[in-house]
Length: 213
Image (cartoon, rainbow, N blue to C red):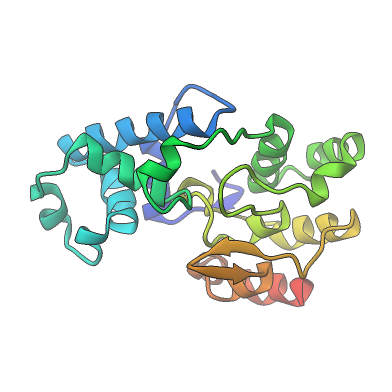
């Protein structure tokens, strides 16, 4: 990950979900992640702590010891997986028939890996991706993933060429005014990036915000 800034917390979540089977079904992905969170809690994995402390209201703001001492159930894990992906509850998540577009997901991965050349080729081949929205309830566009905020925890990484990536997306027609659903409201990439700790810690906040304005 030498070409990315990755916080310790995000790195722990990446480790938690490592080598998880790929699926285009949002429901199946929620189930897979819930199981990883549940098992991770049992063996005190830091990634599980990060996801639980972000997605389980009874444990918001609690210490690591408090989280791991909690009688955390598999049902609780399903609630966490649902909420960290923008659903209000597992009941809502369980009813979803949403699907992830493999090309969109590949574009996000290429962006976050800082792979400008392959990203450009993919967008030239599938130009509609620039205005497509994620299958998750946040409905993020590719540009929103430059904000490192409000998206999947494991994707809150900052490639060191993030400003170039954002510029390429805009050159392909990305709408800087587009909003995604997060934190009970709707926000632009600029708003999300300006309140995210990740671009700032990477030393790239000023350069990125200049492009997003």
